[in-house]
Amino acid sequence: MLEEKHGPLVARIVPGLKRYVQHHPVKLPGGGEPPINGIAKLTYDNLKDRRMSADWLRGEGGKELLDDAKNFVSQEIRVR
Image 1 (cartoon, rainbow, N blue to C red):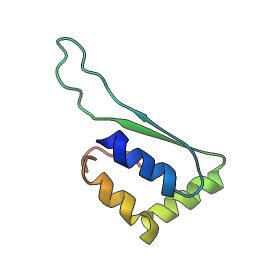
Image 2 (cartoon, helix red, strand yellow):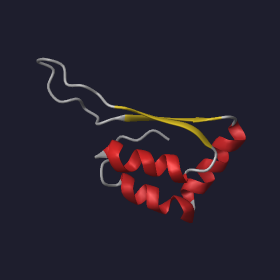
Image 3 (cartoon, helix red, strand yellow):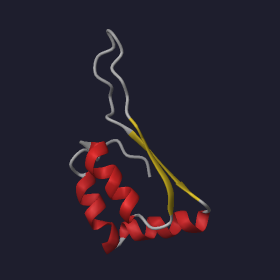
Image 4 (spheres, rainbow, N blue to C red):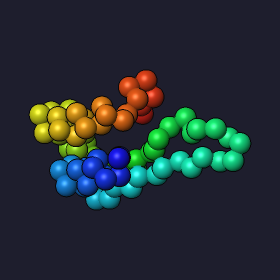
């Protein structure tokens, strides 16, 4: 599950990350399945750390994280 593997992986390897929170939708009565399985909020101390993290993610360092994300992240619905 997302929270059992991906969350700890993010917290352990993403440089400059101050805080990582996963938000999981709940199924409302009569509402059917939520259109998403979660939203992640990443917090940094400053823009410099955020940019460093983004550069890292696009490089070789982010490969493990992106490979894991392919298991559950829709490639059609993605905010960058």
